[in-house]
Length: 244
Image (cartoon, rainbow, N blue to C red):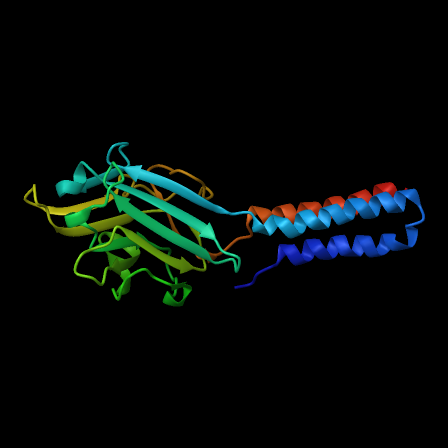
């Protein structure tokens, strides 16, 4: 992965501007410039501390999920995808009843997530699996997928992991044992399962009943990085204007 540290670049721009303005401290314009650039430097240092991530939810109540068994009428999946300081991503998927209660006897035995082709397993780590298996291949109708099997006798309601892959829109499928009410297995998938994946940028909520899942591409700079570049450019522009 080739990564560019926007923080370092922007700080360097500001520091260069400060260095170039030191010889003019006796000049009012030079003093004003230095104060402005020092303020920009503080803002740049604080910008990476802001959280960056996405959250969304689909349910059988809003038409976002299609399922069988007990899950077909009472299921909700929510996700939180957050970028870490090292530019990796933390993915967490939580499955509950519509009321947000645990699924109890009908917990999830495995969760299958769509991933893009040619993603090596080394790009994923830190699974909340309790000893369960992680398999890559074609599972549950998803050609390129990652299947997360829970290791305990009872299934889980939350699955999480880390990845170098940035989030894009895609599909999921989950399954448990036999329904206690209906003569079929408990299964669930997003309603947009058979629709083409959107190329829209990751965002809060959902697009065409899709969820956020790992892409082939590596992590992209967070909005804070764009702010850093912008502040650096503003500093350079101010110096030029004040020295006229």
